[in-house]
Image (tube, rainbow, N blue to C red; front, side, top):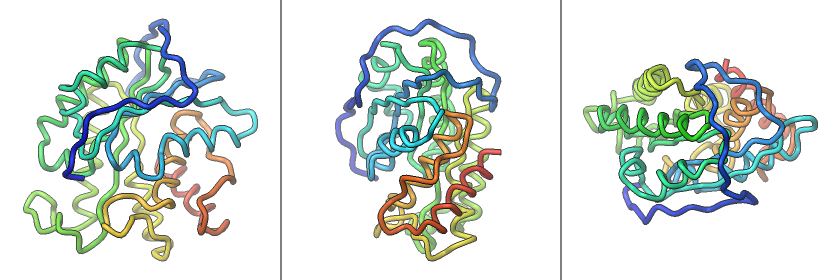
Length: 256
């Protein structure tokens, strides 16, 4: 996640057209979803690996009676929220309009390494999203696996539980301050790890998501966007139906 590439935009079946402005939601309260959601993701390699926006689209396509979802992505490896705010591509993508939601994903460790920069950039990006007529959604990410090198840093808290508490608190405060919705993916991951440790949520590096980890994130985001739980299918290859159901339950519980 330390390597950074150029911020680029990728769209999935979505024309970037102007969208009439609407008033900002109250913090943490999702308005009723329209029949079609147009979602811009601002992220980094955690978003790109396994195609998180694509999984949200797949869940939406399989959910009878739910809203259709179209997505676009602006991402670069290691990109922080401060990087997104300083760069041209993310701000231009937001201000083009056409979005119902803007999902904003920081690297897991950004709120710990640079709390002031994280707060300021989250506020700027959320304000820009609202000005373009979209609902901002802050994705509170997960902690690395135990034993990861990050836990040797003084700012980490020294354990997954202590780190998750800091990530949770930073995102919750930013969401309250900006009127954004909160997608507590890290809490869903923690519940899955506690209930079924055999379900591996990270890749070999202990930080980027495995297919099951991206699926868990997509279930949280889909429920926040659509106001309903993710459907029972599709699920990632290698994840049993029972474990997938447990992941969906954890995602729903995290969002309550």
